[in-house]
Image (cartoon, rainbow, N blue to C red; front, side):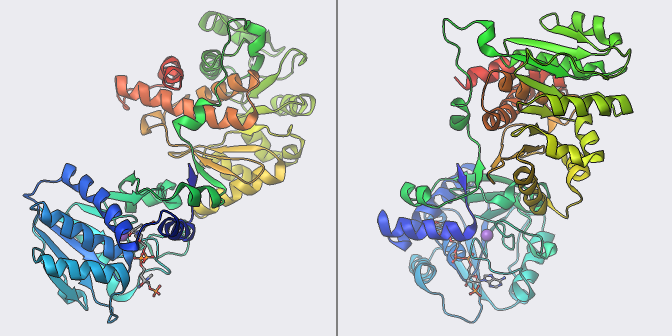
Length: 502
Ligand SMILES: NC(=O)C1=CN([C@@H]2O[C@H](COP(=O)(O)OP(=O)(O)OC[C@H]3O[C@@H](n4cnc5c(N)ncnc54)[C@H](OP(=O)(O)O)[C@@H]3O)[C@@H](O)[C@H]2O)[C@@H](O)CC1
Ligand SMILES: [K+]
């Protein structure tokens, strides 16, 4: 799914009105009905709904929802913020419809003294500002937001928590933004919802389709995408009856050192479970019997050194290489990584210590084979690319890095983002907090390596690898809980994840 800026969404909104065609007021009614249906499923008529409505269409939505709910016997109260300007268009029509219906207590408030009395069980509905927000909230509306945030009541934001920008909140005044428990957003996730620091404002968010025009969506360009199951299905290699193990490639994994052989075992297993034809795991001498015993399906290439990675094997047989998990940063290892990067001329996957070595030897970034895949977590990313103030800035730097070095940068997080050299950025939605556990990154390296070796193009290997990893983690969490989840469970559930993508 494409993601858009709030400005672009307004354009798609107008396109829909013109080309469906549908009137402004009917589109608002349709959008409001989606939220009404959600509210009916989540709250009983015992709970009073207290609406805060602003001057634009977000306020208009609030007025329409209040009327629809009142029609279903919910007790509703509407508090319209009075900016000393007449309401116009659909919000004005909806105000009139509410007055005519006569079921909802209506008040207009000019300052914070007019803030309504709220009982413990009441639900607050935030319809102050949505995608038309043009600047941070200040003054009277900000005071209303402070009052709302100070209440313990459940708060549901309509489209966007008021005060939150749809994309960049670097310059925002954070205490003036509504802190919702739920955000019900129309048609597309807003880009700012995908950043960890904004969870405080959005709470649990959900997308409600409102039938915006597919033509408007298709013709509006975007560099931002939200990865869905349907997209990934096409990226997974298919196995035909006459396939043999050579068809699915030969991967080389360089991972593990003394005390960190688990990284090699975890990444090797994940690579094999991703469907690779053949896997060779390169390990230090002391790791030989460990890997042979733990992963009998893998072949082993043995380093000359007892405990670390110091030299590369003949690279001719391999069509993909993954390097980094648990290799450490000893001088000999840096040298061996440097040789590997210079000698292997197809895309490779670099993770963990390989990234740390790159951050200490940045000139190596220019030597990376084009379309290599880097998989940093935020800490590794900042070591590589420098400090950033927030997630918005971080994804800009991520995109810049992908473009400059012609590599794919996978920035791991709750919504892992995959930046491509052409400037596009893909957000992943699978995965859960249980996956923040030792070795989880090693399994991701193994999965991406496995796909790459099967000749899946590097951009698909990164996007589908991240999706599969998260999906397998979700399946594992469903079986054994997020708390008990360990990295090996992700690999164990990869098979089920593949089946879900059939
Ligand atoms: N996507 C869709 O297809 C659909 C979208 N719909 C809904 O429309 C919403 C967008 O509506 P919208 O464009 O009218 O903007 P909205 O957020 O209500 O506020 C604009 C008003 O606020 C004002 N204002 C702005 N910033 C301010 C500030 N800091 N402090 C004070 N004032 C400020 C601004 O005035 P100005 O900037 O000119 O001062 C203007 O008067 C969207 O979120 C969704 O709920 C659905 O109805 C149907 C389908
Ligand atoms: K809102």
